[in-house]
Length: 443
Image (tube, rainbow, N blue to C red; front, side):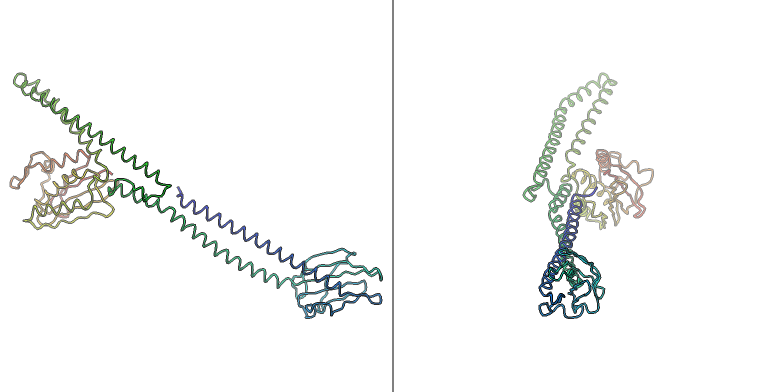
């Protein structure tokens, strides 16, 4: 789908080009017509001048050269006349040995046409038929004008006009692109603002920096954001209130089950299972509400800042060790799709475990693959036996009692991963020889 800016650019450029071509064609037509009219007007003047210089003496026609313009004297000067009589032909000196092929005309009849003349140049001719009442002579007077010089001037004028118009056309096309670029700059700014909204840098549009035409759209978007935020907050509060409201009845029921266990252990066990299901259901719904309500970009874990903060904190906690923690996080991955507190707890437990077991090096890699965000944490510690990898997330289970801890960190990691539907994998690190933990986020 072509963009509005490109469509406007193409349409306006096309209109300007078509208008320029039409203007050039129209100008050329007018210029040539004006040139032709000016030539005819000059020939009419020349015709009158030659008629005034024509005299009848002793029954014959003659032309007084002293009454004519000096243009008729130089050979092939470009201005010619020719008087055709039944038995005589009078020509201007400028024709030299050339003659004009002229058809005889009746008295008062005129004719204008173009043909080849001296030096094979195009000439414009104007003829008129004459008759003498006293002598009874019929004659045809013709004047001619060489068109080559005039056409050359017309071509130069049109060429200059063409160059000027082409320069103006290029300037207008550049102006169209610059104006459209400047006009659509606020749209690009809104795009950048939306990106900042997505990254959580801002929470709404600043209407003071948006043009008047786009302010209603930005205002409606701000209202939609506010409405969605309030709806989510209201849902979360209702779920929270429901959970707290159920705590007391559930506690009472728990006490009753414990009392019942002394009298009827089987019934107590069945009721206890149902209570456990209710507890788990409430926890799942609360976790889902928290995830849904706080998945706005501003509440998500920011990369690489939050991981760098975790690493610096853990280096202070494990200051007796010299651990080189390498982070491989692409610049285009700026956040993890989970609440910051959960992300800090999830990655914090994994990094803390890596710091406990690593000898000198830890590597954290984040990448995009097949529409999944993959986070891997590796260390160069002793690693875990293959048959014991599945036991790592068991609550309270510790594979080495000599190391400080309660065995709850990785089970917490598992719980958080389940809440966010993160695929959690424990493997042997091929590059560092220790443990490798991989998290697969759906994006």
